Picture 1: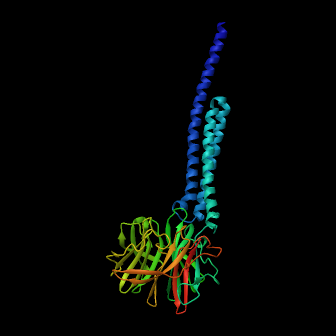
Picture 2: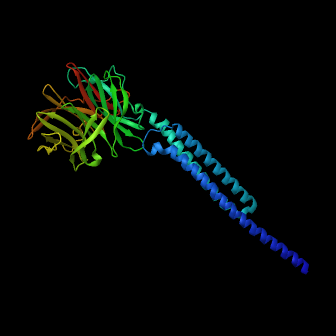
Length: 413
């Protein structure tokens, strides 16, 4: 009897020793698991950083040689760490049985979630780069219209392969749409400045396209980029220098930029006005005075400012706001044209929906005390009828090529 008890005691002692040994092995394996997790994490972080760094910076996704090497190394580390971790988990499960089943299930589920998230992120980028950003449907694009008379009113897109530019033509930014084009003609070359909306940052930058004939255009580059939204790049020339007043409504100011290397490099010069969300700022020079139209507020108020000097000070016109609570005719829709002693301003119609057409008004009286204007005709200057602009047009930038010919850059949706 004592012998049996002795054997049972020895067996119990041996079992306890084995259990202690197994606990020791579990601790050892947990340490190894930490190493495998570290390997997996290094790989996942490396892979994610090389996949997403263009996206995070708001740039167009381009995988160069270094990117491909980083993605390959990150993938290898991720796979190796994952395989070693799973194998180690399998050994524990095999030795310890049902005791660790729940633990293994939760950890395995965590691994699956991590891998799935990583694959989903890569798939998201691939989808949006190869489908969303390369699909012209639903984008604002830019076209060229030609006037059928010697006046800047009767424009048509016939005989032009419109649109001449789309978001797909932008090569240095993941553009979702382009709009608000302004034309400049200098030394037999046509320049077009326009808004480029970045898909990832949801901010507008200012892009440039160049043409030799005004009809066929080549995208050049982004020429102005700020940490806030830019649009409506009203470009003009004064005393052989080029200036730009883009819309910077999110800064509650109107900012003036000057070209230090036209047309590629622009330098912030001065804030002309501040304190309101100034929208679609349109400047022109007439009768030795600078005049500036801008839209403010959500009630469609068209305000007018004037100054004897481009750099200011600027004074609000006593008749301002010129229009109030007017969604049809208040918001500026392109640069003001001064020709044959006539002044024409264009306005985008936002009723019943945003940017559906463009009207023209002739300014008959503009002094520092008075202002009067008349609408030109009973029909809009622009209304989309082609396949690329049937849902809306809200901008025009006319340019007189010669005494009998006008062309205009327009946008459409």
